[in-house]
Amino acid sequence: MPRIPRDQSFDSTLALLFDPYGFVSKRCRRYGADLFQARLLLRPTICMSGPEAAELFYRRDLLVRRGATPGRIQKTLFGRGGVQGLDGDAHRHRKQMFMSLMTPERIDNLKELTAGSWSVYAQSWAAKDRVVLYDEVQQLLTRVVCTWAGVPLPEPEVRRRTAELTALFDCAGSVGPRHWWSRLSRKRSERWIEDVVEGVRAGRLDPPEDSAARVIATWRDLDGEPLSPRIAAVELLNILRPTVAVSVFITFAAHALHRFPACRQMLQTDDGSVEHFVQEVRRFYPFFPAVIARARRNFEWNGYRFPRGRRVMLDLYGTNRDPRAWDAPEEFRPERFQHWDGSLFNFIPQGGGDHKLNHRCPGEWITIELMKASCEFLANSMDYDMPDQDLEIDTRRLPAMPKSRFVMSNVRPRSES
Ligand code: HEM
Image (cartoon, rainbow, N blue to C red; front, side):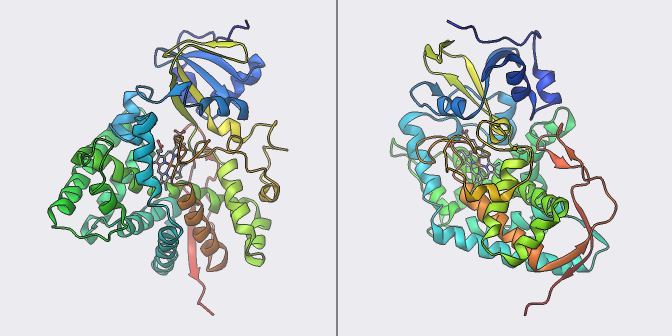
């Protein structure tokens, strides 16, 4: 039986923090294998990369999520008690709550709200010397998703709630004060949204029937009981936080339009091209580096032994650039998506497998549509200049981001014809 290659360091957590997007794939190449074992946060962890490893990772009979996510991620990014940590029937039932929000009509509604908001924001940018796109889009999306989800957002609270929702994903992976700000933001956000849930239940708030606030506040788990206010808040934040996080991909899309000017022309002349462009942005740029599970029982895979309880980490970024699945993976080529095979395991920026049965992101369609609306606006409805700035992608930060956060000046919305 082959032995899983071992990383030599006593603990590799610092190496992972230093190179979060390259850590797994570089070592897999070094060991000539799809997997290796390292000690991360003092726990032995099997790290894997590639489509075949992804297929294993989403086997529900072999891997589970309960107890897999490190506490520091639960106290910031995810919260405790949410869908991410459930398995089996409990997971399938809770996931249904999210999937019920993703109807074509609801997604179209969100896309329309977003397109309208771009017009309003672009007008306001015209009056400013320069704007930082990443920061502006966080606020734009906070307003949009609160409206869409039926969560009241009084004007004086917009800045504060934007900052708190952003801290949940933008500072969770940091160490030191940024991480502590993320923890504080989790506490504040949960208190805010618990009030909303209780308001809906008490009839003080009356969001639309098909809104996330109503659906989550009135959802009953398999035991027939409503979710506790705190868990309902965690789940409603599982809609608000990641929608604001689409600002990361939108900033990358703006970066790609700048770096690959032929793409901008393509978006201006060919309506069908925006989908491929957006998919290539999600494949090419680094965002969510990896996902974590635990072995449900002892098992063997390709001759390797996985002991029960062992933590397993799947490399999302490296799999999206695996040369076995992608030609010239380091090149930005939207047209590759004309011929993509639709595999559930080779293109996994938001997880793999089946949306209903696995933990794959239920917000994937929302992400794609918000990115499309934003790219169409950036390419066709406004002009802007790019002052001198450092556009290098900082891949030591989580999530990665152009160092300047994408600064625009002299913004000129085009008048509608
Ligand atoms: C910003 C772009 C996004 C990225 C990069 C992203 C990424 C991911 C990833 C990697 C997972 C975990 C997959 C796994 O564990 O196997 C996930 C799960 C999840 N995402 Fe997203 N996501 C995004 C947007 C969204 C949006 C817009 C929503 C909701 C409106 C959303 C809601 C969720 C939920 C609820 C889960 C947990 C699903 C489960 O455990 O079954 N995400 N996402």
